[in-house]
Image 1 (cartoon, helix red, strand yellow):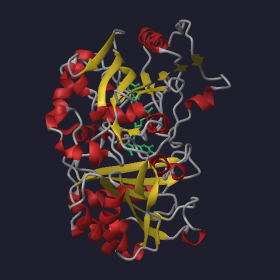
Image 2: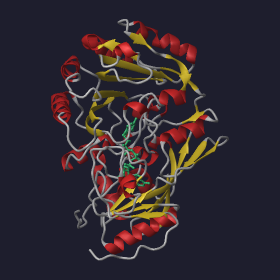
Image 3: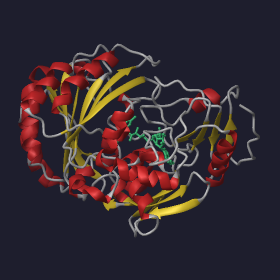
Image 4: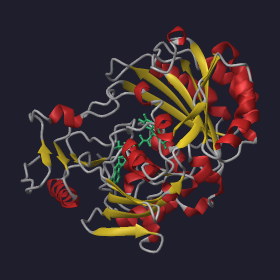
Length: 461
Ligand SMILES: Cc1cc2nc3c(=O)[nH]c(=O)nc-3n(C[C@H](O)[C@H](O)[C@H](O)COP(=O)(O)OP(=O)(O)OC[C@H]3O[C@@H](n4cnc5c(N)ncnc54)[C@H](O)[C@@H]3O)c2cc1C
């Protein structure tokens, strides 16, 4: 490959051999090892444009990095150019208009802090060190999504740098095809340099926290859970973690390492009503430990942070699920506590509510009918590419397949091949491929869960 001159930029251009290189290429997932030829830590949009133009001239593949959390490591590319937004992470809130402008390197903790300063919020991911960009472009759901919808449902506009170097704004009345595609179609269509979101008045307190049950009672707990959430109001999301109790500050020492079913409600509405709604859930069992309490939303948002730190090894398998049948519960109970690593876990997200009420054709996100997303997560603190729990995750995933919808959340996909990518975009794939052909016919943005441009000759690599 000929060495082309990279134009002067305001940010940092980091190559192999640079003392900053190892840190710059590190991702959240310590199982991913890729060595880009150049990492451009952008100081502004012009830097991103210069890096993109350079990569195209030099014939290098391009990856775009927001928070660097994608489990498949799509924000790095071997021997290519990484357009890295980690230095561009400001969040500007307009409280009167209930709007936030967010730079593409922002993390959810930064958005939560800026919006909660005004009692405002938007549906976010449930780990605060996750990036806004990748999560939003794939859909995005968390504790507030049953009440208010997906993160991408809150997108008002996005500024984009397109593959040909042009700059556009996508919103409902400007490039509507592009605006449709980036709400669920991931980073396939361009580089987002600014997001504008709508916010809600949440207040600052939620009624939330984990209920820990002995794993030996998991079947009964999950059946009760299934029936309880069938009638849940939108203000309530109840997630379930099946794992050994982690060694985190909020877990009492005598329970750490114990196999538990962790039922985690988050009530975001009127707190007195929430106490009444949650009462049967808290009574059932009773649990070994009830840590449900009125607490700052920002504190609840951080509850999982320390359990999934940067640099550990992670391998995920995921399904969208309908309401849990007894057979599905039997599979969960049979597999969830088999991993050898105490850090491995299974997390059941509770969806539906406002997510499901948005018309299917409104955006590219394809999972609105799912009641759950399940994330079977092999986790090994020592990092590196391999661990025996990967086989556990695969076997568990296979066993659950007959009970799943056939779809999968694009942001939980690993490197799993074309069929799974198509499953993630579901019925929207062909329309996405047509939009892709219009905005990125040469498939410049292919380091992602890739949509092939319809009718175009595609370069591989
Ligand atoms: C610990 C953890 C918890 C999570 N919890 C949730 C959750 O609660 N809810 C949920 O919905 N998801 C969740 N996720 C999944 C998350 O949505 C994805 O990992 C997502 O890719 C993270 O975005 P990022 O910006 O950090 O990723 P990155 O790895 O930086 O980017 C991923 C991809 O997004 C695209 N991209 C990034 N930035 C841009 C940009 N500026 N312009 C265009 N394309 C871009 C690129 O294709 C890139 O390859 C979680 C992930 C982790 C690791």
